[in-house]
Image 1 (cartoon, rainbow, N blue to C red):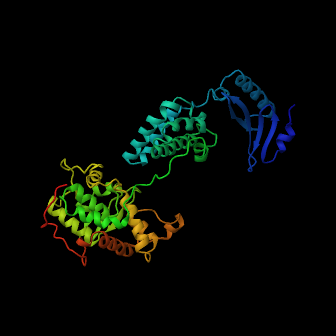
Image 2: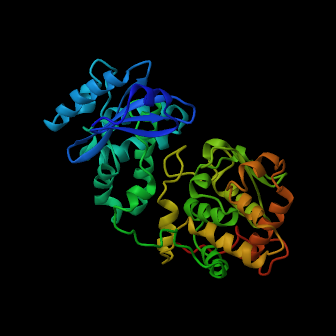
Image 3: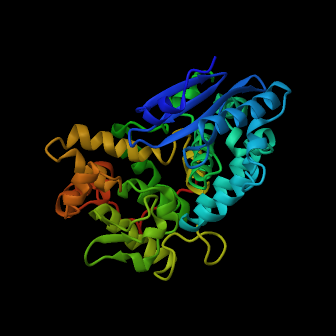
Length: 401
């Protein structure tokens, strides 16, 4: 028996009010009222918006529309699709993914846009690409992620984020109205991923010996780039694309343009004596025009595997990126008087809350210089002023790798 009357609907306060047979009146705190029909379709409960009250549907009209859609649902038809006849067509996931890539990609780097498209096309579209975007729920996402969740955990997490970007974009376009699944909704339906996803890093106490051994070997662009990466605690891509116009030997700084940075904002690195010595040797070996550490092809940077190859030739299984962790551990243990924020800034990480960032008007360069000078003296004393066993890089015997 119906539970609502015209008077009850008119006076209904915030909340959900049932009329029976799956028809509900939802009232927002603002007082706005809308009709919702709850049905079962393909074994799933669906809440289908029918329209507002009283502008779209009266109680009698809502009951009539609900009865029609409920009958279709019982017959196995898609009640939501029936409701949407004559409205703007709701795209499939694959179509929404393409639209999101085209629009959101305008604000991304070429690499980010390409990764977004390729990962979803490879891992998601074959499984749920043909489904309507408003019908994508946690179980479909789980099914798409399951094959790579434990086999390729790092990629799987990125794919999950990109799926959510597509769903959020679809919601902004009003192609879907249901709440978005949360990461917890998805991960709770997947196997637990193995831990240890951090980059393998060399303990900082072993870094000086490693650098000393490398300084005795052939001065290839790859090896020199690796050493400069360690000395500056930079990312390998930033070093491989570093150019002489970014360097000021007089100011002892390496000013990296935003195009090279992960956070897409420029960043100045203070250069230690050891880093300066390495740059001076690179200038003598490779010239001072264009790339500091040139690749084999003229005008092209080193490949992303070149630095890793140097590590493997040295018998090391740790990652190049892991030297940033070694630097951070060293800063925490050996430079405790320098605030942690300084080390984070040296790594070009964002620091503090949004409010703290708004009020921070300095890049703490003097403190960063002290920190990087200390790191240079620790890991490469032979290249540092005041260090022991100063090495004449140009005059020593070269040992091929």
